[in-house]
Length: 263
Image 1 (cartoon, rainbow, N blue to C red):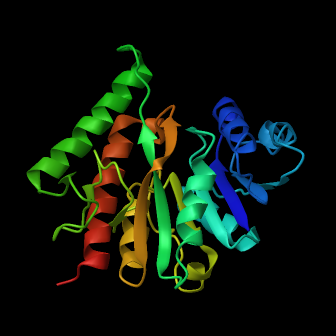
Image 2 (spheres, one colour):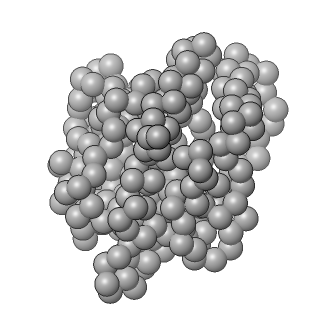
C-alpha cells in the first residue's frame, strides 16, 4: 500500500496541479495526505475534495509552518507501506508512482530505504519580475557557496567529504545513490521507526533532503529511478526575502555539517 504526503502553504493553484497529477496516475496511491500550513484552514480544504474519489484523501491543518514539521505530521498520520513526499509544485508524469513502487516490489530482501524520481525542468521565458530576480539571486548564492567550499557537483548521487552530494544528473538507468531529492521521493514506512525529519532546520528547511537521505543511506540502500519523471513548476525557495534566505542557507549548511560530519 502507498501514501502520498504533500506539505503546502498558501499555494492553492500549485496544489491543484499536483493533486490532479496524482489522481491521474496509472497506479493510484491508497491515500493522499495534504499537510496544510496555510494562513486559513479553508484555503485548501475545498481543493482536496476534487481528488479522485477512489483515493482516500485527508487534509490536515497545522499551525506550525515548516517543511520538516509538516512531513513528520504526515508520517504520523499515514498508513501506507510506501510513503511518497511531493512538493506542492511538482507535477507527476502518469507512470511516476508505478515506476517508484516497482523498485520496492523487486527488493525482496527489503534493503532499499528510499527511491527518488527525476525532475524534468520546463523551459521558461527569461523573466525580470521581482520574484524571478529573487529566485535567481538565491540560486546564485547557493551555487557560489558550493563552488567556494567544494560542496557539490554533478555526479553519481553520492556524498562528498564535505557532506554535500554529487547530484545524479544525466543518469539514464536505475542507479544506486546516497542522495535523494526531497520533493519527489518515496520511503519505506518502517524507516521512520528510526528516522525523523530534522525540525531544527530554519527557513524553508533548506537541505533537509541532504540531511535525511544521508542519514538513511548509512543503514539502507537508496535508489534513483530516471523513468519516474516529474516536472518542477516553480521554486519552493521563492518565499521570504533574499537576505533571510541567504542567511538560512548558510546557517543550515553549517548546522548539518557539524551534525553529520563532526570532527
